[in-house]
Length: 125
Image 1 (tube, rainbow, N blue to C red):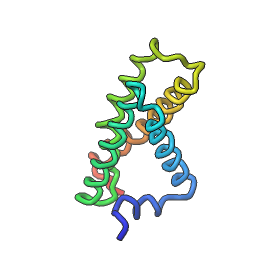
Image 2: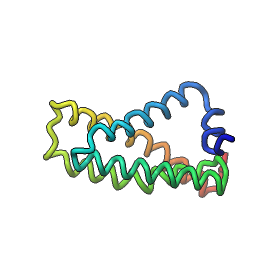
Image 3: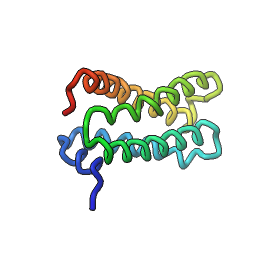
Image 4: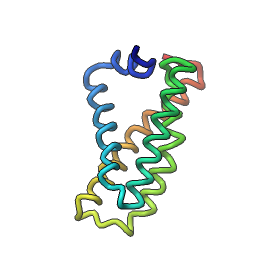
């Protein structure tokens, strides 16, 4: 039995499914960087986001409100990562991952904030 969240995502156009896959991959790479504080913080936010979004989808359905999960967990994560910039060497693989992850999550957050506002204004689908 598939979850409400997975069923909803499978209804998206293929390009959007690839974007979601990209977000899954880039955030899941935090497992490789558990020796670094930022890697552990990203993993914690990623797991919390996944649990919360799945539970929310089961409770309210596949609606625009699901973006609130990224707003709650990724907004503080992005702020944290931006504040850590002076301590990260962006010439290393680790720093490049942090940069790509931050940009990816910021792009997602733009869409998520818009979706949450639209939901609050009555547009659910």
